[in-house]
Structures are given as structure tokens and as C-alpha cells.
Length: 158
Image (cartoon, rainbow, N blue to C red; front, top):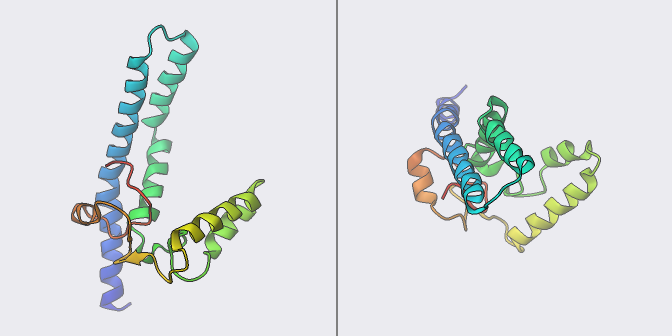
């Protein structure tokens, strides 16, 4: 393995272990704040709604939920060239077709993703600059925090 590949892998691992760890905490906090804000603005919540809120908070803090957020973070912020996403250059990613073709509503999902991709590209050959979507805000801040890509339209923690 070349030293360039080793360096690239090291950067990806650092992003996954450092940036995504912090990102996950921010997503959980942001979501928890939204839930708490919703609950505090509502008076006289019935017991069923209170139970749903309690269960959402419990799920949000679960290992399963945290792992899902980390997985999304890795694909979004630790993914050079945005490989396997609608942001990657060239043709529609085969990874997405393979992933969704097995689902019940897979055909609909694939078509929706292709339409979203066409709206993003609008005839351009690339929508990435330094592995970040060109319209993504806070790129420099994300880079400073350890992100190596920005395969997203927005960053939900900002």
C-alpha cells in the first residue's frame, strides 16, 4: 500500500473516530432540544403523548440510534469524493441502486434519488469542490472540526 493511501485511510479513520463522535453528540443534543422545546410549548399533554416523548428520548440515547447517526456521519463527512451518494461525480451510484432495489418501495426511492440528483447537478459535471458540496455552508468550520467531505445539502447541527 502506498504512503498516499495510508495517509488517506488515516485521515478517514481520524474523521470517523473524532469528528463523527462529536457530530453524534451534537445531533443527539439538537434533537433532544427540539423534543424538549416541543414538549414545553404544549400544555396539558395527554399520557400517550408524554409516553411517546419519553420513548423518543430513550431511543435517541440508545446505542442503536447513536450507531445510525455515526453511520450517516461517516458517509456524509468522512467520504472522499462522496462515493456511493447522490453527490458523487459521473453516473448515478450503483451502490444506491443495489441498496434500494431490494426494498419494497425501492423503485420509487431510486427514482426520487435520481430526480434529487438531477436537481443538484442541473447539467454540471461536478457539484463538489475539495470533496464538499459547493453550496454547503460552513465548509471551513466543518473542515476545521475534522470533516474531510461534505456530501450533504445542509448540516443539521448548525
